[in-house]
Every structure is written in structure tokens, then in C-alpha cells.
Length: 376
Image (cartoon, rainbow, N blue to C red; front, side, top):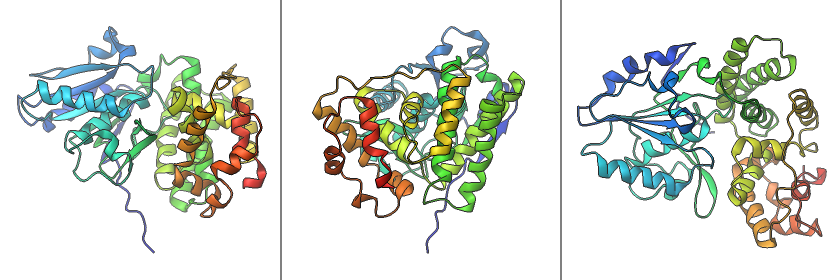
């Protein structure tokens, strides 16, 4: 039997105010005065001196503000890489991502594509990257996505939404400063927190589960309950614990896999551009047949925090668009295998899904094509 030899983030620092140590952490990694550090920063912080004034720029260092209204695209990565190559005479000393999952994924993808030929879409899949990425640092400003610890960078390409999954993807350095999450809006806090919760559920209920992933998944799950159910923590304690839940949840799926909710939300995102966290929530809300106890708890958390999910977002989809959504979801084979088992293709096929419904224009119907107990 061959076991996965998983790459870990080699260095991590945790603590409130640890962001202030960024300059001393990256300074030894500078290659030359002509090799800049490129800072990808969530554009929500543009004009916010509380964060940006603490980024120390030297020589040719540059801040690039990243809009986060849409999920990252392979074409966006290609453009950023081209801009960097054209602007600087030497390869950057490093890429530093400061933001949520979108910014962190972009930072990881650009660091890979600066050392690998071709286009980002060529590397969507598993273990296609041949050359190590340049030095890259992840600094999450919101908790839950697990991007700060994962070996994937999720991108929407011309044909599919799929990550660059490789041993060269994980950050070389991560700075976990819970203080950076203090101004996250309630709905966004919930959606990304539930991304972490769903990571745990899909890992702990999957066929790929093992003691390694279980130990991380159970800890992340317990921390999510402390934050979203018990709600007895101070604001600072909640920020600290959700940041650690995100880390542990990301580690849990790293050595196992996610499942049905993520597969289906990828299809949703590809067709409609729905952001990852809210897409997972919309899907998971209808997956009682797969995860009955945990969906019930999800609904209770949703009610407790006064969260109303969008409805009817697929009401105007054409048959072609629905087919694309289904095919994108089904293309994520490791996710379905984890959720259902090696023989999942015997029960989950596009034709069988199509035959189960006369009307495929509501999102609720689309979800229930997948969530019938006969598939399990």
C-alpha cells in the first residue's frame, strides 16, 4: 500500500498582533534589490491605514489590490503573472497574500505560475505542477476557507472549476493573526465559518477518513460548535478559535477529501459565479439525506445567527446551463468517491440524474437530484 506523503506549511506563527512581524519574517528571503516582494491584498483594505500602513515596502516592492467580488479565474492568474514578468527585470523574491480564500488562492497560483510554463488552466487537476513555486506567504484576514493550509488553489477555468492541487501549492510561511478578522461582516463570517464546518462534516463522513484526518476534523468540528452554537466566547476568543478551526479543518481534508456539498457548489460557482462559502451553504442546506444530523445543526446555526440564504437562484437556467452545472459537479471524481465510495459511478450519472426530474429549473430540484437516499 502506498500512503500520501503530504507537504505541510513549513513555518507558521500564531498570535494577536503577529502581523506586525511580517517584515522581519520575509526580510531574509529577499533575493536582491531588484527582486521585489509582491503583496496581494484584498481590496476591502484599500485606503485602510490600520492594515496597509503596517506593510513595509522597500526597493521595488509593490502592493496589488485584488477585487473579491468574483471567484478567481485562470485568466486572471495568467494576466497577473504576465504583468509581473513585464514590469520587473528579475523574478520576485516572494508573493504575500493578505486576505480571504480568494486572495490566498491567487497568491498560491501566481507563485506557481511564475516558475512553470504555460497557462494556469494547464495545471488544474492533481499533481501536474513540475517546478517548485517561488517563496509565498499566506496571511488570512477571515477564517474558515482553510486555504492558508491546503495544497490546492481553486480556480475557475474555461472548461471547469478545479484547483491546482500539488505538493508545491502550500505556503512556505503562514501568519495567523486573529486580530485581522475583527471587522468581518456577520454574513461573511458565517459563510466562511460554515465552509470550515462543512469541511469537517465531509471529511468525517467520507470513505477516505483515517486517524490523521479524523483527529484534525474532530477538533475543528468542536471549535465550530463553540463559536457558532454555544456562543459563550468573548469576541477575541471567538476569533482565535475560528482561526484555529479553519486551520484544523483544512488539515483534515488535506489527508482525506471533501464531498457532495463541495462538488455541487463547484458546479454552481462555475455557471453562476456564486462565491464558494455561500454556495456551500446553499447546497448543504438541502443535503439531509447525506448528513442528516449535521444539516439539522446547520439550520439551527443559521437561525441562531439570523442568516437567510438566497433562494431560486437557478430559476432561469436553461437546460444547457443545468447540464453544464451537473457535468462540472460530476467531474470532481475524488469528491464523489470520498462521499459514496469507489463504485459511485454506478449510481451517479448525468442521465440518471436527468431522468429523476421532469423540471430542472429550481435550485431545490437540482440539489435533490443528488440527495436522494437511493444514491447512498
